Image (cartoon, rainbow, N blue to C red; front, side):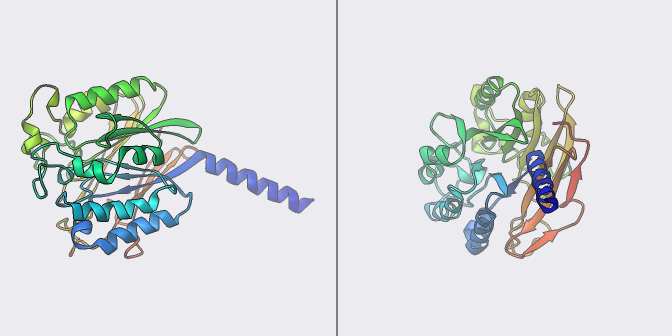
Length: 322
C-alpha cells in the first residue's frame, strides 16, 4: 500500500509539473545550411522529430532557403516533412524566401515556391492553423494551442509585415481576446538589443518590397512594435532572425497592458561572428514554466551534440506574468 501511495504521489507530481510548463523549438535561419550543408539541416529536423511529444511546436524565423530555388525548397520540404504528424511547425518567410526568381531577394513579394512546396491544406492540417493571410497561403498564419491551461495564439508574419498584414493579424487577435500571443517574424530585433529602426542595416525598406506604398507599406521592428506588439494586451514573446554580426539579441519592453514582452534574436548561420564555416546547426529550446514564473532559453546543436552556455545563448527571464 505504501508503494502504491508513493507511486500515486509521483504521478500526481509529474502531472502537475507537466501542466505547468511546456517547451518549443526556435529554428534560426537555415538558408546556408540548405544551400551548402544539407546534412546539418536534416540532422536538426531528425533530432526534433525524435523527441516525441517533448515539444509543443516549432518556430522557423525565416530565410528557410538561400536562393529561393526549386532545389533548395525540395531540401527544405524534405526536412520539415519529418515533423508532419509529430510536432506542429510555423514558418515565417524571410527575404530569401521570396522574389521574382531565384537569387532575387525580396525584389517582389512573390512566395509562389514556398506555397508550392508547402501546400496550404497540408500545412494547415498538420499545424493547428486557424487563419491565414492571404487566404489559403502560408505567408502569414495564426495557430491556436491550449498549454499550461491557457489559450495561445502563435502568429507567424512575413518579412517586413505590410500594414494590411498587421490589420489582418489584429483582427484575429481581437477575436481571441484572452489568448496569450507569440509572434514569429523574420526581421525585428537588432544585434545591439534594440528594435530595428532607420539607423540599422538590413531593414525591409531597403528591399524591393520596401518601396510599396499605402497598405502595402512594410514595417521594420520598431514600427511593428508600435503598430502591433505593444497594443496586443497579452503579447508575451517575439522571435526573429535575419541579422548577422553577433546574430543574437534580447529585449524586454512593456506593452500597453503593462506586461513584459520578451523579444529574442537568434541567427547561427554562415557569416555570423564565431561561426567559422556556417556548420554549427544551433537552434533554440524555449521553456515556459508557469509554476516558476520563468521563460528559459537554451541553445543546442544536434549536429555537434553541444550546448552554447555563454550568457547571450543560455539565459532566463524571471517573474514572468502570464
